[in-house]
Length: 601
Image 1: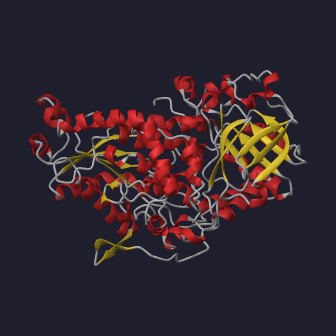
Image 2: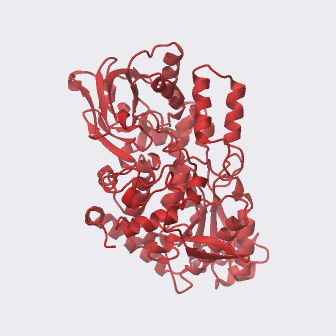
Image 3: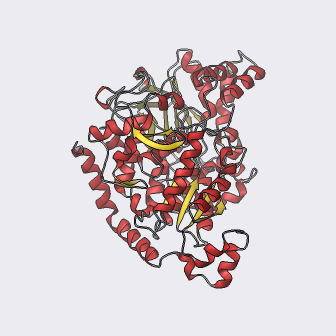
């Protein structure tokens, strides 16, 4: 199928906008690649330090005639999604030796769990951890000893940070290695109901803890379709995973076989062979457009609207919010995965998963097939699904039809004609809303505003019974400059209770919401942020705010904001405790949410 003309137009617009920065970037990585395997240029002393602990591999490393694979790992065993990575380096090294090559752990990067820090001070470090991850991976790769890199990471900020690093070292091939989702536990909608009952005082902490632990019960990613699983989708749509690798459960034979195959593929695409595939050549404007198409078609996390511009900038590609809006307008919503539906990612995978979606979107002309991937040229390779046949990993054609139309539908008969995310613009700034999980009758909310500068203030007002009428809850001074732009997901049960009581409610904030959020209309990432003098700083209690997801607008009516002085609360409490003092430089230098909210790019 020829590429959709509108998608081609958007892609050309991005390419033309990016031409100067992309051209400079490609020149830089080409010069870096021309020098050949970097460790060959190290002094004998440099090399001796690098190989000192590599028993059994020293001779091969010293001669420099075989590939050396660098492992950048986000392992820790506090984060369930990353716990399976504990033994990956051992498997990688053993597989490398079998292939006649070598592998080393180049370095580790931090990996925080937003589920642990949600509603806590530590959440104010979450967004900035993406830049720290990019920096940490950059330090690991700066040893300049590697012919390819394996990036072990899954969750919210980890994959975006690792992609930023992989792009920065774009002359080196990069393979991203997932670990898969945990098996299905207590259904996500049942867990959400218990949370709402707890917020309303109908159940106690014992019942809440039982529900939470029955939902989050083992190794692997959380099973809802939030940022972590949206990241995994992205890596397949952008050609950095093996086909079908994203949603295979941990600690299974197929999962181990896919990890082994990832090592084999990394070895095959170094400059020492005949199929050199540096990461920077894969990460072009078409790859990023494909990623955005996947985000819209699956109803993925709003966090990616902020991460993708930062990731793209690292590869010399300039994305703007309008690109997301224009792609969303032509891409159908094909999936219903919690919080957009009742199914989890395991059900989605069983229904046909990403391979089915990629095939459908290619047939509809809504994906670029003419891309480079780690598997070869052409995204059609990602319509295949991995299987074990007599213990050997092979790929076969994926399903041509959805195996569950309540979860996954064809592009021509989708759940909605447009994507799951919508840009909002108006006199309150520019933001984004995830509409895929919001009932159509709640796409337009107009009500008096109630102004807060902290999410705890909202919870206190709820406990005091202060919400008795339709309300737009405005939580401002939650942007990157103010306090690191924390997720406000802990407000979801409170706002959902109000909504279930029959009130029309919505959230407007310059902060973020978790990728797991969606039932309550939420205009998020509003920019300019209040701390930078944005319009939200001039709102007052009682102002009539209209959030119109249908028209894509966010406005206050009947008020001339220019006549008001902006509020200037004392934000000093945001700058100390739980490590926040270490991130003052980030708060001072971070860019706007619309540009990716990065302090380093």
